[in-house]
Image (tube, rainbow, N blue to C red):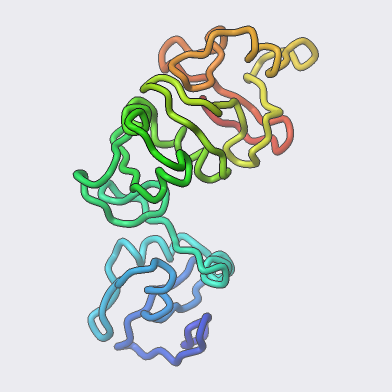
Length: 215
């Protein structure tokens, strides 16, 4: 391990505020601030545990890529937006069905010009469902708390619509045909015939990237 910041090369001593990556590289206070887009600590005092914990779970390569693309790390905490990781009060946030906060900036990225139905729709859906649209740059137009134009069944990892319920026969099952002819439950794009009885969610597998997810 070098005693220099792997981003800017600044020499770091024992008294300098710094974070350590999962592959044991050091990140100075200034670049830690840049990574999160906010003040993360003070020199000679240290960096707050929530930021240290995030850095410790990620490699220097991952962090270098974020900083080079001018993107901020996303912190997961009850008082932060699940889309961008910024702190947001409950009064300014729109809260999802599973009690996750979403800021106005992330809301507008999915819904564009928001209307009165947007908060109701978000209140009636889980945070992961909203995130799938946000991360894949998909747009929605809220109509009511249950429905929005643009909802679709797709892989939240690679954005492919080539997905199917686990256990469904590959030759006979068609997502497109099923979606066109089946009732959608709760505006979530779930095919009623495949919804789990206990959770109301279905296990799907993406036929392109192979990853599994629930909807």
